[in-house]
Image (cartoon, rainbow, N blue to C red):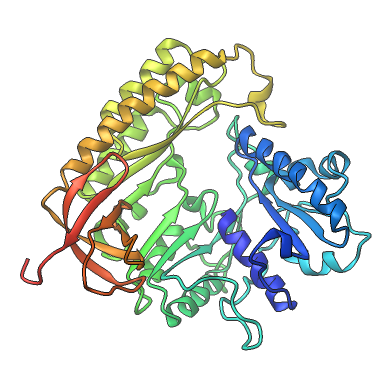
Amino acid sequence: MNVRDSEIVAQLLTQQGYRPAPEISEANLIVLNTCAIRAKAEQKMFSFLGSLRTHKEKHPDVKICVLGCVAQQLGDTITKRMAHVDLVVGTQQLYQLPSLLEDPRNRVAVELLEDFAIPEIVSPETEPDHPSTQPPSASRFVTIMQGCNNFCAYCVVPYTRGREQSRAKEDIIDEIEQHVARGVKEITLLGQNVNSYGSTNPVTADGSPYSFAHLVRDVAKIPGLRRIRFTTSHPKDLSPELIQCFAELPTLCPHLHLPVQSGSNRILTLMNRRYRREAYLALVETLKIARPDIAITTDIIVGFPGETETDFADTMALLESARFHGSFSFKYSDRAGTSAQSMPDKVEETIKAERLRTFQHRQEKISLEHNQKYIDHIVEVMVESSRQDSLMGRTGTNHIVHIAPTDTQFSPGELVNLRITHAGPHALRGAVAPAHS
């Protein structure tokens, strides 16, 4: 989501005459886009801003802008702590960045609106005299909704992104068609919870019901589009209709990121996740039946307040049952404004660290076991980097594949058949398969 927001900001600024600077030392404007999901990201932001203080003293005309989720969360706390910051812009106000920069009296713009409507996304095509700020790419992110209504106990997203608002279906399809017309082969549909797309506000011209599964099917009809991905999904909203899409749509990649967060029903309740481990594992089984080659990945939080050894054992047991292809796992950290912040029975850092090591060690072994099954198999890879010294691509299951040196020239977006020759826990290696294979 932040990558796409940064693209939008770059497009907006380009249309106002800005040009990308190769180095910070050459910039008139420095924009820092921030994430508030974990405390570490916030700490890194302040550290980076601190490093810019001397630069600002030497170059007082340079403007420094902080935007994104930490900007939304902290507001004028940033300008009070970092007086050299010129402008703080929240998640819903980033679309106004060019006009906010014009008036030096603007310091903080972080208003969240209950009925916020996502503005029409800037066209991916820029005017002839405004060159694109983005390198050519065969893959693009497309935002379909913003905000979240779930209020998980550990999460700041409802407070930094606001309530769920879905974009109009016609606008999304139009944006994707423009991308495809310019050579894009793969689209990733973005939202804090894509599964609830269309459930909060009307997304069709006549107001008729329209779900995320409907959108995926309509996107799949766009000529020239070779791959569809989406992120992120909440398990409680994963519908049978969407699961059926995996079974019926060849362009929908066989990969699903489905965050579970914990394998303990007691902890899931404290987290306000609103599903049980049994229901989650049933979804995993149904997905594997619908698309046997699907790769399922997840998010895990260890050391949530009150997590006991028994609770953690439940998480490890869920890992053995689900056998995720991969996972993003983290130690719990307090986030301001969340209900978990005031929960008792905080887990000691040393215990959290040990549990995280235990989980990641086992996950890495399972990932390696999955990946080794691809050895000697031919897989279709979309080329992402065409540099001969670092040729790589990605499978439909979202595995990175490093491609052995070859005399064949490839372009980003090209689909290539590779025979996998080596597997590690995080990536594969393969060689171009002969045409008769």
